[in-house]
Length: 177
Image: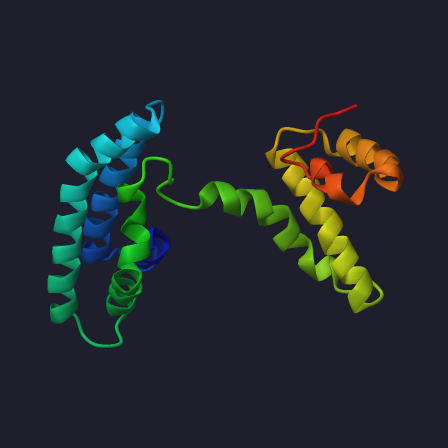
């Protein structure tokens, strides 16, 4: 949602977008302060500091939406945020949930950028295999494993692994031999 206001402000120097960005920056500042806290402490901080800012921001967005022309860029930015308000504010209810999904987006960026390069995998079946392998590689990275060592070990063990124990080879359960 921040991106909509950021783009609008960058293109038009919109004062309304700037106000929204200022409020959003305050939310991120609270998250920086809460970064090293436990989930429970982060939840408490969010209840105390974040929830009031979000309530004010929501009321402001609703008021501004009534004032701006239908179909304008600021109306679209406000509508985008208001339609997704429940999802955008869900992080306040759980200290373990991040404020945004930037980390996940950064993890999948290499695959998203390579999509056009992989259009010609040979067949749909080959494309699905490539996607499965890329998913395993990224999952291995996300679980702190060296992808090469992980795949080498798993491919060595796979032929003799019991079907009932195959889950032990998944990146989140894998233990090197």
